[in-house]
Figure (cartoon, rainbow, N blue to C red):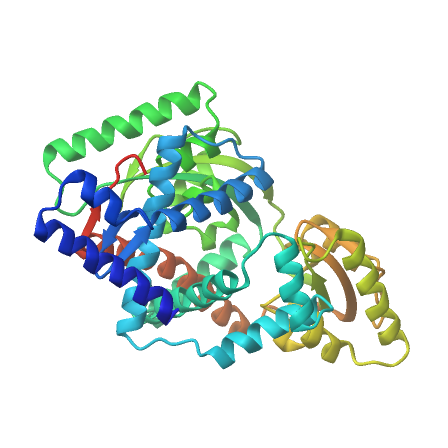
Length: 438
């Protein structure tokens, strides 16, 4: 990464020198033909090759999700804006001393290779066969870790949760049932800067009104979100995923409750701008006083360019046989599972109602008795095997409810604070886009 930054800063230095020396257009083009600079972001630059690589990655991601791409100009602008935000956060991480050592990075990659049943050498070879650059893979992974850490550090410390808020959330959970109704919202943000003029606000309101009109006329929500949304979920087609009312931003809760599936709400204003919401789907609704809960462990393998569907299934069959022959499930989960949230805990998912899991996972778990282990099965996350550790009827103790309330409040406040923090970073940064046709 240090060499990468050195070369980019050298490019930035050369660009500044060229401007200072007043070279002719022809001389300038000749001088920088080796790499085109798309944008200057504080002390960093975004290169043409970097933009093209990110565009290709996002195209592939949206294709897998079945999302239709907007026109090329809007798409490139949206992706470039995300790269600008990433660059700002990475520079902040460097100034804050956030480091991911080569040893840590190597250990992470070795773990990924091991979980795919390969040595590091085999993993590198497979990347090459798939047309992937191993050095670029390493640096992308390093950057992802750094951005995650700096965001957790700077935003997490802005989140304060009072005991009064916890009390109120516990009361709400008691009244509603924490897992009663789940909403899947589509979200488009039309940002309004803090320094916006009345004309800026009017333009934003008109843009939001036009988007709502298109959506109510049948336009594809995901496509418009990719093209126009300023929200962090834009490149996911604006899909916020399944959430209970407790997990939604406070502003969105009353809107989600009154919308029917498929309806689009009028724009609503927050400190970030204007939000357009569509209720994509809704499920649940049963009140539960006593909840039948299961404690399960699982191992997840994700099919990829490196690991085919059949290879993942076969690998889990081999792991299952090891468990049946006496191997420790938790140890194997730590070694092989690609569920980052549970792997370090030996695949332990804790006590939960089967209803919180995906339909495929839920149906398999419901058929298992204590101590039984499933055959490999597929969900939208990949291939699993699961073992049931036990069943119980939850008594919903006060301590457990309060801890859950804190987690819900933190998640809600963290997302809102992160949006504000990113807007502030963007507003304070020096950004110059050199190629508007990028």
